[in-house]
View 1 (cartoon, rainbow, N blue to C red):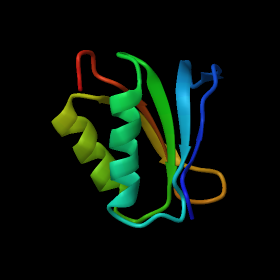
View 2 (cartoon, rainbow, N blue to C red):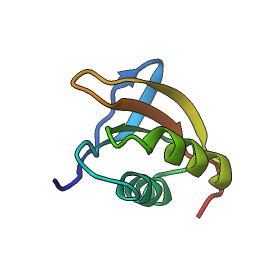
View 3 (cartoon, one colour):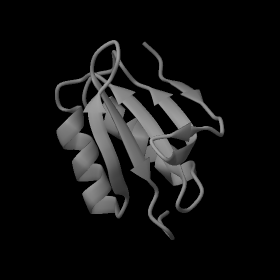
Length: 94
């Protein structure tokens, strides 16, 4: 299944999301790699929403945020299965 990115302005858990990544169905390491790419392309301090269902996604996404200086704002169960992550891109990250 290919990832699907929707770019939109909307209020979601008090954060306007710049992008929404539908990564359910992808297996490790693809959810983390595609999330990293989206964060590289995002503006400083913007928020992206990621939906993923790979069992390693919670560990991989948390590790990505910690090592790359991004803020994991939320991790919760997603409607339809998997997890929903809200991530704020760290300022000045490449």
